[in-house]
Image 1 (cartoon, rainbow, N blue to C red):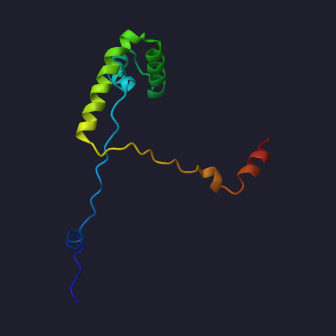
Image 2: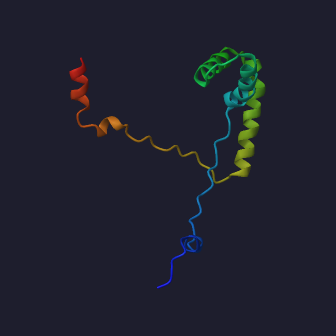
Image 3: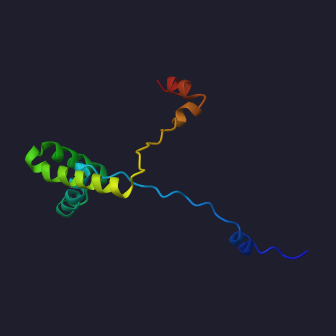
Length: 115
């Protein structure tokens, strides 16, 4: 019996190709936030990402429509380009799995015992 060379065996087996994941095109807020995030992070020191995202959301909502317009137009241009580049693309969100709460048999009783 000869020795098995695992590296050689691994090379011989074909690996299935993963399909390339096509990302969704950015919407107007994401186009704006990309630039605004860089600006805010340089101006504000040590702000965590959650606070930064909340601030960006509030700033976007407070922008008047005439200031939003260039970002809406850019997002539309990106969307059209995305359509040309990926004509077969369809947004298919993944279903969320049930949380681990359902897998814990004593969940309700453990909460009740804490009260």
